[in-house]
Amino acid sequence: MKIGIMGGTFDPIHNGHLMLARAAYEAFQLDQIWCMPNGNPPHKDTVRSGTDIRDRVEMVRLAIAPYKVFRLELYEAGRTDVSYSYRTMEYFKELYPDNEYYFIIGADSLFTIDQWSHPERIFPTCTILAAYRDEINTRKAMEDKILELSKTYHARIRLLVTPLMKISSHELREAVRSGKSITQWVPEPVAAYIQENHLYTGEG
Image (cartoon, rainbow, N blue to C red; front, side, top):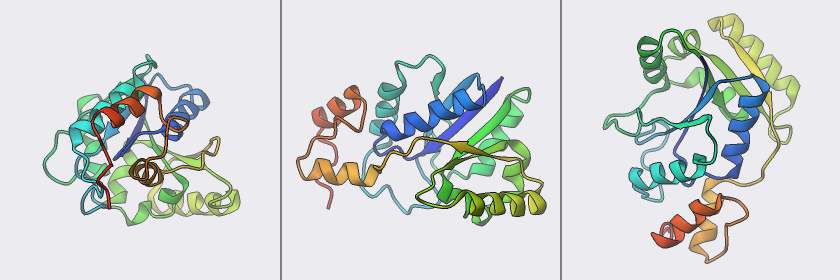
């Protein structure tokens, strides 16, 4: 099967994440999208809002429930040590060697992926799908970076043209803390879960 992997803290998951996943699914004719909450990411000392991994997992579950091709993947959420992408992808390749993996990242991550832990071990496991958002970096700059990574690591990287949604999880947490509605930015069950469980209201 052709599997798209979309990881993140999802704190909270929002419509932009879902738009990106659907764009990858359609553009590359994938069979499934695995949404993978990260319990202990290497690039953040802590999840700044202090949101419990169980809450973030539940929000992802609620958000993807309407989509039969989306699957909640708990491999990183269940780990107590730092989750590195190369370890996760090597694990999936070993466990399901017949699958073809597509690792979905944002445009910003494309320019820093060679600074991740052991990038030389990530690229052999998957094709990278880099979301193209013109407001952040030009297509030419992304193509130049792809060429560089391809030459250095023999990486397989494709541009993923996606609709631009000008919202971030940080902005959504701030909006909740300020008492503003976020229903236009997140699936309705996620908004209800945040309200019912009083998430983000104490964020400083």
